[in-house]
Image 1 (cartoon, rainbow, N blue to C red):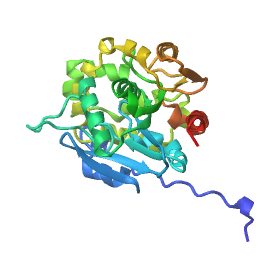
Image 2 (spheres, rainbow, N blue to C red; image 1 turned 135 degrees about the vertical axis):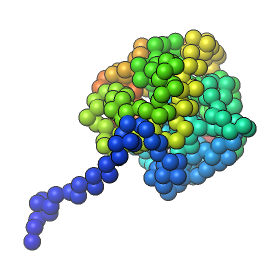
Image 3 (tube, rainbow, N blue to C red; image 1 turned 120 degrees about the vertical axis):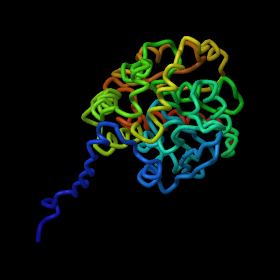
Image 4 (cartoon, rainbow, N blue to C red; image 1 turned 90 degrees about the vertical axis):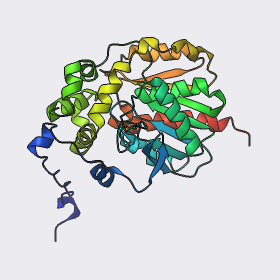
Length: 321
């Protein structure tokens, strides 16, 4: 009989190979397939602005945490920390349109909505009302960070704490993989042809150490990017991403305990922006992760979870007995 030491752990089953047409981006992944593959046991859907918005709700704690992902990501980017936090908190995370299982929103005539900041404002306000969140801690990454701090500025009494992870907001040069969609030829051709290697390169670029990116996670990003309607929606959205128009001085008026987390190897948003957030938001502080990239909570969830827990407990400590 073999000893326990000699038994090798089970290897994950290899991912099925995608067809050549799928790998070239000539075909799109059907929305029904995404629902089948990427919804979770706690998945729910709510009708907002004409779309079926996918979100996951876990835990029944007295405090609510709302997690908002970044550009071209999904609620799965929080998988490494959400379950652990749900032991003590009500944890809600959603797929922002036009990403993830949610996909693009459509207007009354059936056309794809352009997701600019005013549209995201209307969307997140409606989402919070629809699921009954009146007060919460907001945790946002990248684009989701900007949506989070902007919500805090507009709904001051509704936000207990704010966590910004490699957040957008300040003027910056768009990453090349996003900036491509500012070119008319790319916008016109990408719904019909966008080779998988380009998407793979973009996803690896958000990690400080691309070797930490699992094949399963990489495949998920690819399939969401190649999903029905996603590339058309992204082509409409990217030209509106002009951060010069964002009024970041409004953060100076915030009175919300704020933690800024950042990967020092972020190649998408300059790490120097962490200091800009802490300079503007009164009483905020930041933590820099020397080896991590643009999605620290996905690349090294244990580090982010440790710092999040410590920050969240501070709020608990000042609550009346």
